[in-house]
Image 1 (cartoon, rainbow, N blue to C red):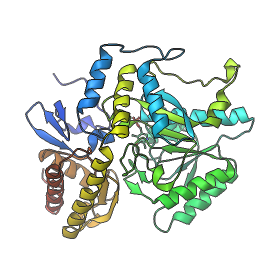
Image 2 (cartoon, rainbow, N blue to C red):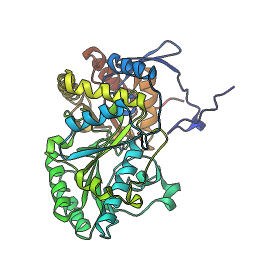
Image 3 (cartoon, rainbow, N blue to C red):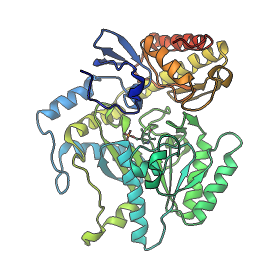
Image 4 (tube, rainbow, N blue to C red):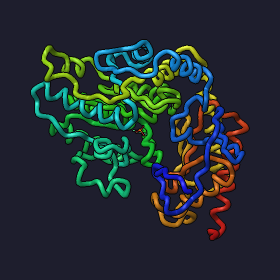
Length: 424
Ligand SMILES: *Cc1c(COP(=O)(O)O)cnc(C)c1O
């Protein structure tokens, strides 16, 4: 019997094989048919320290023996308190409050609701949200609304709310981005939501810290709330704990998930500054923050997050990140010296390039190059998932030099294979 499972972002009609994973260990995942696969994308950007990282697994084990789950409205527990205190110490001082949820999409929804709640409490009519072209903030209705429109969400368009768009600030387009942001903010936008330094799902598009700082300054000038979606960029991905750090930017609202638990458990937080908390603080029940989900601050997930925070506070993870940043730069340079690849770029531990149009044929997400590469990587026991003709490497920080070398050998071989006619 075929499996009843409906997989995410999967076209089952293509009947591609879906391997069964039985074990994870550092940068490797092991399949039921005995293959060892290098996880070159940290299992969709979540696994920061590696699979089954011992201190995180131990924290989960210990917590599971004490308390699995408890209602979080009107009750609290030690793992959540640990995480909240740890985040206050680790994150910028102005972000004083921690609201828990369970996914990147949800913490974005929470951020948007907090922003509108803030303006309602000010008695000021501000509703509009400003977003950046090519952004991705998740797949729930609100998160899709503030993300790039395209084939991904075309069918749901009637449910999506209108937003103001600013162009992506690529080389030469910075001023156009600033001008659009300035006019949207001046028109009374409630908030601007942005992925700092790297637009992940939009194709690993990168812009500099100076641009981030300028955008933050424009929002501040007009009182537009600045929401940093660091769901992907947070926890060392861009070389620093937060991408915002590189620009000296402190957002009004910060979204964190993915690496929050080291990728071991689903958990997210939305951190807010004191004015946003104050706007909801009252003796009037009608002014409370109307958001909850059943598993808010699940104790086992919180225990994993507390262990991750301890790693960032006490561990040598920053050295590990710095080493990976250097190794990625060296491999990327060697690859681009040997192969005709375009828009070679790196931000911290993330390396990316585009396969040129003459090789890849049609550009864009559905281009033929993507399935060909995907198949090649899979046959060579490498987990990479190109975004259209963009190939990127975003491994767990523990990846060894030998494993990373193998990743780039397979990529080089895949580029050679693209020159041959497709089979089948
Ligand atoms: C992945 C991602 C999200 C959504 O997170 P989920 O946990 O998949 O819901 C939101 N924002 C950014 C920037 C992301 O990369």
